[in-house]
Length: 375
Length: 157
Image 1: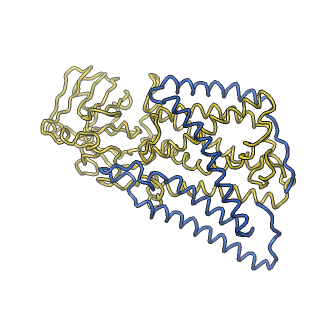
Image 2: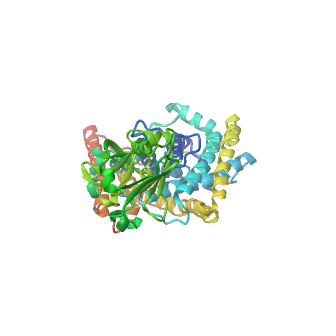
Image 3: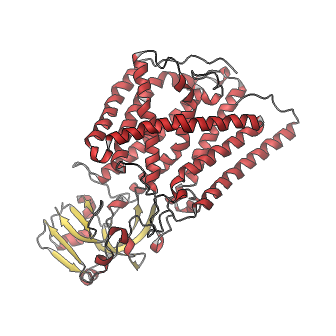
């Protein structure tokens, strides 16, 4: 039996190279999935000039962000198992035997601390809990780059060792060691499966009754689905219910529009089944009806490649505006919705008017819309 | 028990490829965190990052070790694996649901956030975990009975 170098007190097969390698591969896959889906969410919310957010399939963001959060949650048992497996190496003496070894081991500080921090801040964020002194999305994003960089260094350093450990035939291990290892790995993958099963129902509706550990239920909230920011929290209760509510379409247009709610209701409506897919990993599909954004743009005589800034009644805090690129603005499913499932929108869902478009992160489905600025 | 094998130092071309690719990516992350210092609060961020390392190594891992040590002494080998699995999955369930369980992040006017009674919900999840572990224990017991063999010799796990 081979074991990681460290004090002889750690003798279980849960500390050997093969166990560490299997867990390492699993974490390599899960962190890569989180990184790629996280990057997609980042560019969807902060699009570089070359990026246009695809409008189809309409549930793309729902899937990528659901996978991002689910994979992060499943990584908790895997990361803790991996750290337990290699824990004896913390006490290795001497701590390094060459410069390369020293660099590799020093990179473990950001790799491990950053990985723990990514999972902790991510899981805190889905509950809207912010016990840390830094901004969540910005710091989570840059920590991901730090961790992926350190992870690439780590994979390079462990490539030879891990390949050998994984390729090794079982003949070299006593059956009892092999069995112990399998039971340990099955336990940790089982724990990852369990936390996934008990949270994935926040986005996979048939499993929602099992979402016992998730901070959201897709059917919980006014009109049967969740709310992230209430009208009260956004400070729009009075302005959203005001008789003087207007929708203004202005900017690069031939004729500025200034419509009352009654005038809006008189316009032709369209409906679409579209998901609300929150960055927090919950999602739910609803049937929305309202005026197509592209119809309003046509009425105002906006150019066919127009981009639009959608503004909320909300006066302060982030996410009170969102951008529609030219694909999003002209998609027939991009609506300023007035009803959901045939009922007028609840004020917490954006009454009197909310943006709902295909494949958009939930924070960009601006509520209480009062202005479209065409650019 | 066997002798502890020497650790293999990093070697081969993969080490250099890993550093050539990984260090620039890492540096990009550090640079981004520094440039966006108003949002990232680099000093506090670094404290939290190193703090996460220390919290794991000084608290989480020793507690896991202590529980494992107790398990080895209190529970005989054939029953150890299902009980260990139950403890690990229960601990992970509590960790994942930590915020809703403590009511962190709850906003009074938004009942759709953390909508459950999480003490009951987490206990239910843990109950399901232990129900599975009980089946596992029953399977071990049945196998032992049908095999009619003495239990394998004790060994540390």
